[in-house]
Length: 114
Length: 108
Image 1 (cartoon, each protein chain N blue to C red):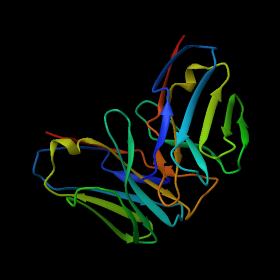
Image 2 (cartoon, rainbow over the protein chains, first blue to last red):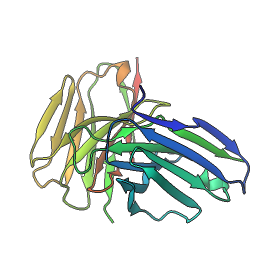
Image 3 (cartoon, chains in turn cyan, purple):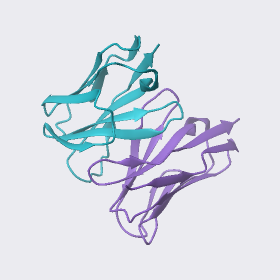
Image 4 (cartoon, chains in turn cyan, blue):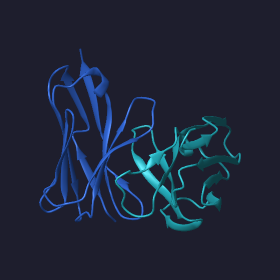
């Protein structure tokens, strides 16, 4: 009964490849996010979707394209992978607006580009 | 854009000592949240503070929100090995901006 599940957990791929990471939440939350955590543990927001609509698109290369088929799913597709894309990518969800329950994070996808 | 700064970056303590991490924002925050990330894990929500000057406690953890709502702190009393991890503060409306975290290292 994982609340926010991401697949795959690990992803090793070569430069130039295209890959996708999937995320699903069963909490009934309206808003979902993608965060990138680098090797120094800095967490940076990439995208935010509310009920399938894009709210936030931080300065992320357009090689990254999020897709939300419904409010329970937010996938991340990455084209032409580069070495600098290596990081842990976290999906998260929350009720819309400030909440006493905070964000619920998935367990992360460790992407390694070689 | 909004910046959330956190210090110290690393803190080494002996087990049983106290620990404090501080968070400062460049702008007034409507609320601030705190998260803990264990090594190899994912961030886990601890608490949200909303009111100016608010103080909340969770067992050995004490959270404070500044009067101007631009700073916050997390204090752990008598640290235990289970407290090891990275503590993040975060603020923002439509998408949380996280501080860079404080890595708590505990020596038994």
